[in-house]
Image (spheres, rainbow over the protein chains, first blue to last red):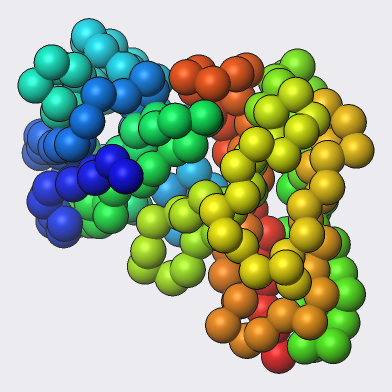
Length: 108
Length: 112
């Protein structure tokens, strides 16, 4: 099956700093999403981005499908950005495969 | 606010109990999913229903039994679970294959 690798595994930022999270995947995909999991367990959709670039406020994402990677940019980080960020890619038949995640801690 | 609603949010059950987790979506999506997430791990797919038919079963033990009564509802029936089945169970839906997947808030299950 498809392999999804995220880096870095852990990240500590000072409030106001910028960061880039990376997701590499091993095969062509029909879906790529970025999620933020909050401390209560909810997976919040950040981006549906199988290719191209999107922006939403302080967050933006870029997927280069031909090179099998995606990047999530967080600018001017806030303590509420803390949590786990998952990249997930679509395999056959609606199957969404998750990477191991990046644990982000933003300190005030 | 999530448009995928899961109940109950927390469930504690004994190993001989029978219980059910419920999921509902009103987005007109045709695919619905159950995922299981253990602590400090990513979610793992259990089942996919597409147009109310089971399309993927990721070799899940028979003590977990999914049911899709209609296109808006998805249940997960639980029977004779083990303590290692304690986890966060996430329901999700999508318009169809290859579209964005939306998750509910999850049901925290503890088996004692």
